[in-house]
Structures are given as C-alpha cells and as structure tokens.
Length: 228
Ligand SMILES: [Zn+2]
Image 1 (cartoon, rainbow, N blue to C red):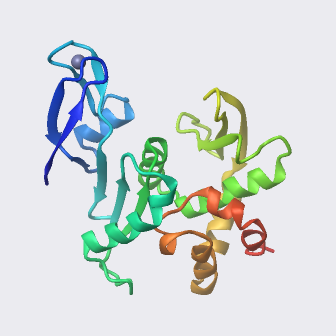
Image 2 (cartoon, rainbow, N blue to C red; image 1 turned 90 degrees about the vertical axis):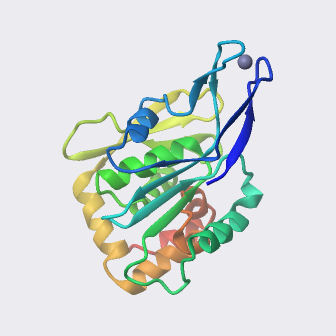
C-alpha cells in the first residue's frame, strides 16, 4: 500500500494518506461508508470538513467477492482500468473456482450499491438487467436523464424498489417497485445455465467485471433477446 497526497479545497493544506481504503463485511469502515462519513477529515489548518476521494476496496473472502472503487477516472479509462485491476490481482482470464468474482466501479454510489446488493444476496447482473428493462418500458424514464438506484431503505419483503434520480437536480423523481418473485425468475433464466450466462456477460464490458445498465441500454436489442 502506498501513500498519496490530497489537498484541502479551501486552504490548500496538503494531507498525506494511504491511497486506498480497504474494508470487509461488518467492518467499521463499511459502517462509516454507509453513513457517508468515510473519507471525511477535518482539515488541520482551516478546520473545514474535507471529503477525500480515494480508491476503495471491499473484500468478502468467505463469499469470494471483491468490489473496487477507482477514484477520479474518466469513462474513456474504464477499459484500461479493467486490465490494470486484472493484472494487479494476478487473476487468470480462465476463471478458476477459487478466484473471487470482482467488480470495478468508478462512481461512489455504484460502489455502495454493489456492496449492499452483495450483502443482501442480490446479483448485480440481474439488478442492472432489471434497470434496463425499466428504462425500456417506462416512457419518461431516460438513461441520459435519470439514474435508477436500488432503494436500500425499502423494507417491503415482496418487492424491490428502485428510485429514478434526475441527473441534473439529483432529486428522486419517482419510484418503481419490481416483484421479488420476478427477480428470482429472472435470476434463474439469466444465470442458471452457462450459455445464457455467457450471453449476458457479453453485454457487459470487461468480461462482466464492469456491470452497469448503460452497457445494456446501449445494446438494447441484444439484451432484449436474452429473455423470451
Ligand atoms: Zn483546509
């Protein structure tokens, strides 16, 4: 692990911190992440609260899952980053049983959402597929204008709730509920058999290590043919 310098946006004071935050299930760091307190520091010079955008890694060893958040990279750098992570981990391209599944995220909200889904045993590939379905079947909902977010706070047992967030105002504009039985049926259909799973993976970048609805929406017709 190496150190990195960060700057207070108010007074330009320089902080030196570890460049990456590591967290595990039930760790203090994860609780702070959920509370929005992780990476918040009081500047020792001006006293203001500063949010430091740095890399984060969530690792669940028993359940073989690693989720990365890469700070400060552009859309154009995602493919390169996928290669870099693969190299860094020393993972083989032919996936062995022992190798954890991993995901790259480049957006803080995506990172939190993927961890939450993993902890609650939802598959993010199916969730992103549902988002593409909702985009395609709700006039007024557009991937260029809205983000669809899984709503962690919904306690209804029989439904998954998604919030449509206006990208400009960052406000929730409406909510859509998705039947949990339909989720499980989709999970069986999309991931149950290897051939179908491979077809779904082909819709995502980086051999499905970057799993975001935008890739499904862009290949609208391809994703739509996956399910009868
Ligand atoms: Zn400062």
